[in-house]
Length: 234
Image (cartoon, rainbow, N blue to C red):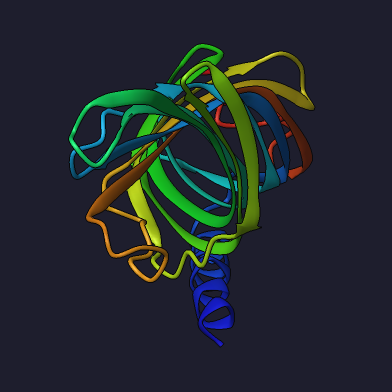
């Protein structure tokens, strides 16, 4: 029900701008890149790593005056995070007898709704805006390795992540026109809120998403044959 309500918002804005503007473009956007999930927790020093990522969806852009632009998107983003941390294993007297190492991975799928505005100079456009997301699914893949008195063992932990909280943050990007149908699109997203679901554990954790991708935009339709506008020209 919430997803249906959110989908009404970009649909309404597209209809409104299409009625008021004579120059617009819409089509598909595909991108690959890197992502990470910054993690903080009580008494745990996480070592974070970057992971491959990707997203795909629809875009809509309209021209504002001579060089301005307004954009909307709806797309699915796969965000992955990798991390590890080590902790000491002690006996009943407090003596260290081994070490435990956890290698973890998160796989998060979000349905995202970016909205932004920017400026175009020649065939290059720069923009800044906001992005909201709804978690569609979340999975974890952890491997815990313990070494006690030289004896090593490992355990895999697989399961779902009940990510209930929406994601929200800042989105920035650059669009470079390649032809009348194709554009190169580089975008960066920084999540601002904690998406960690406190039902997963009683510890106080903070998770924030980051994603950087480079991809291609293909224009289905544009009203002034500008290709993947906003490279409108003069």
